[in-house]
Image 1: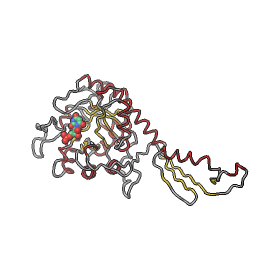
Image 2 (image 1 turned 60 degrees about the vertical axis):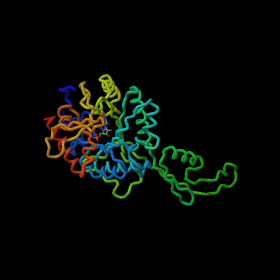
Image 3 (image 1 turned 120 degrees about the vertical axis):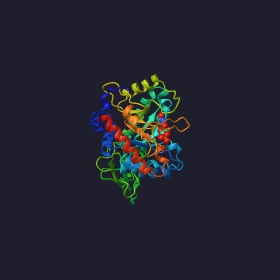
Image 4 (image 1 turned 90 degrees about the vertical axis):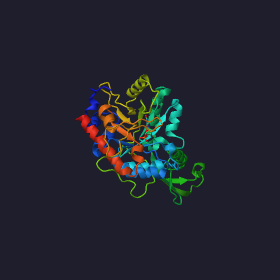
Length: 374
Ligand code: BMP
């Protein structure tokens, strides 16, 4: 870590003005607004527990981290399922969703894993991450996939078609819509009267139906994710706008686990890949700040964080979990290692009252940040 890098002493509000990535800009402002640099790692077993935790702990955090594949009962419906429900809670409490997917494969495969398949991660997770052991090209592949996805939602046309006896159909997929419109267009005249085509043959035309096509375009900057919302689902956290619809990637540059095989060269390759894709890569999952060049302003999120039990020396040693996980306190990670957001899982989820424990972590982590920026 470079002790002198300006990002270590610049307040988040100032960094918000300097960053290029729209999600970093939003996140830094959200952090200041909520006085929080805490991410909850919601490693629970059921979708019900996941949503309960998001609702309870939401007010204390700025990022909610998931491993969707360890949740039983994950509902994959893109509009009403678990991802969409999480998105509603994210808007209500003001946090970003980070799917800790750790993509690692050839570019084409990660593109499909990110945008398609059962989970359609890109639809509900603002942030995901990648291990670049497979080479830097997969970062470009993910960036391209995110770019195409964003272009597609730019043209997210909500179409209502009424033909003859009024029937209303809503098509969610842009492709389905354009197919439907293509099918209808040639048969419709300028008055919107659909004829049976017999006029062209010189035979008497007759009006058999009236077609009305209404379209509304969802603007590209609309972050709306769930379409079938219930009453109250559109509540937005006060004091800040909704998160932008941009997507962001964190590179897994260093790990918290004992004996981790990621070398300095690997970490440096992550930094270089991040610099090459500043409009998509927000920063790193790492154990220290990796900003070294003057223009670096990546965000650093750090797992392996735990506090000693309440009442004990707050900067004391915290034992690992016996399965390779190693822990540091928020104060050490933020003040000494220079990271921005601490990621806490079992430290919060495995106590009797996760809500007040999250508050305890939020306070400690924020205090460490305030002391770092002076
Ligand atoms: P816990 O605080 O309960 O140890 O959980 C840590 C979380 O962070 C887990 O979800 C784990 O997958 C993730 N994680 C980690 O512990 N170390 C890393 O280096 C990278 C991670 O994503």
